[in-house]
Amino acid sequence: MHDPLYWALAVIAAVLVGMSKGGLPLVGMLAVPVLALVTPAVTAAGLLLPVYVVSDVFGLYAYRHSFDRRNLLILAPAAILGIGLGWATASVVTEWVVTGLVGVIGFAFSLNLLLRHAPDGPARQGRVGPGLFWGAVAGFTSFVSHAGAPPYQVYVQPQRLDKTVFAGTTTILFAIVNAVKLVPYWALGQLSSDNLRTAAMLMLPAAIAVYAGVRLVRVIPQGLFYKLVTWALLLVSLKLLWDAWSQSGMA
Image (cartoon, rainbow, N blue to C red; front, side, top):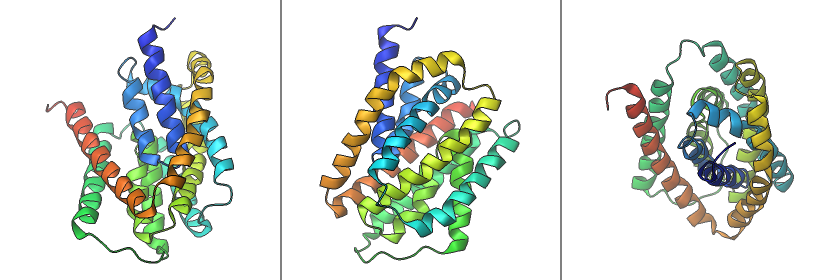
């Protein structure tokens, strides 16, 4: 039986998951740290994965007409390969190293965008080679440290897609990633029956939050949307660097 604080933080985490599936991907990266305040991080990640998957269903419906097919065809197979690599190396990879690396990448990328003040322009296609690389990195880091969004943004954000297409492409890609992750997470014992029961109770607030996220994406002007996404990436990257420092034992 969980106490009220546990349930309060669990609902907040579920809302963050839902809003991320509504088109605000970096918000979702805060969900596991929030729930980890009252339960081990590994348990929190296993508990929230089913919530991610159910929220993905609502996100897929909301963005069923708004996505970039070419990006998905490049990124999705690469991300699945990255998940497989993460599963194969789960016993030897140090989580804090991966977390720190993602933090460095996200920080450098977002800081560069903020300092350059790049002008708005038409959408442009990303190249296949970099897409395969960043897709695989996103899948790998999503599996190891639940931090797939920063590598994904490094590839997609410079393409200057329409904000709704960007949000839809993000939602669909990570719906695929989360569905694939269910297999190794189950095999590694992170989807216990207790976690699944708790996750079931969190699905309603998560589903409601999906549509709140969709609404926010639609009303925020495009220029402001990308500025907020960039600042969010910078702040999340700093948090990842702090997490890596704390986990390394050097703090």
